[in-house]
Amino acid sequence: MNYEELYGQIRKKKSFLCVGLDTDCRLLPEHIKGEEFPMFAFNKAIVDSTAEYAVAYKPNLAFYEAEGASGLAQLEMTVDYIRSNYPGMFLIADAKRGDIGNTAKLYARAFFEKMDFDAVTLAPYMGSDSIAPFMEYDGKWSVILALTSNKSATDFESSILASGEPLYEKVISTSMKWGSKDNTMYVVGATRPEHLAEIRKYCPDHFLLVPGVGAQGGTVEEVAEYGLNASCGLIINSSRGIIFADRTEKFASVAAEKAKELSSKMAPYIERLK
Image (cartoon, rainbow, N blue to C red):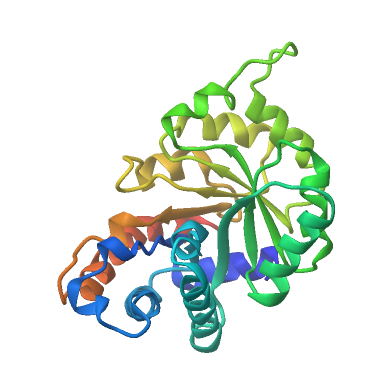
């Protein structure tokens, strides 16, 4: 999926919502736990109930890897189901990979060839060697960690360099030279919305993937105010606040309500765009 196609989906749905499929087996509703493939059954219900309001889904690989071969099989089942039933969806593998050489090439092959994701989250701190193999795939995206939403992000990401710029700015400005707005986006946490306006000064056109809305305290309004560009340029992710808003037999319908609530806050911003 290219830049214009992604923006087209956003305009069509009047939403820039990404639903994070952080499917923790320990938190599944009791009636789902007895299914042969409980993670897939849960994901299928979440996707069917929220697809009207979302433009993207973002499975977090840790939750699937923790379940071994069965978890990875259910991740592939989830991706295949979304591709078959909701072909316009943007799929992000939240894998946070960051290796080099043949290892990076194999990670790229795994996510873009074997599992058919549109994008994968990547740690850039080993330099361009850790990103370049992913950029060899047309229509695929590298989602580079820049300024994350966790508290200890200040340990390194906000450190001020000798040049006077924070490390996350160096990461963004340097990695922008490796690719283009058509294959690179950046993770910028919603819990730091004041930095979005600063980032837009030197990164005006790229999409930003913004986690931290909902359970972590970020708001759609703050993110849109500081981060929106002429082509929207935002994908806001909500995970727990949607998928685990309810853990009874009503979990899917409650998830739909939460997704609708967030997307309804996004619609006015999309309507203002040309």
